[in-house]
Image 1: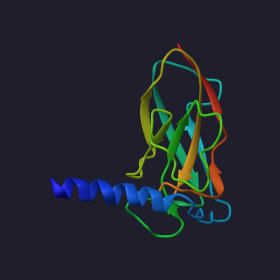
Image 2: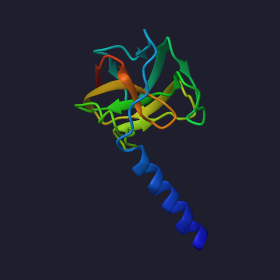
Image 3: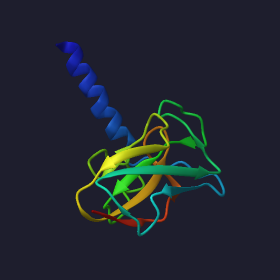
Length: 140
């Protein structure tokens, strides 16, 4: 029982430490992009999204090497998360901390926006942020 409280305290403390931390510097020329679907595409409710990256190494969140990171998919997010805090993990901010470069997501019918936000092992955005162009898809 005591170890459960210890683990919870470490997780909470780690989150607090990450708040207010300066974002890592982005490698010059690094960029991310959504390979598919294309902007304006009409798709089914199960959407296969393929991520692309150039000028930066994709690595699992366990890799602490400078200049590496992993994708986060922002779904219907109006503004980027704050630069001095980890990217949230919720239904609108999907984490790909194993270094994944694609996923199939389920969306409700209607218009949705998708955008990639690349982050380091702490889920912190780079400075400047390495984000894709936001695309809009129509789900039938």
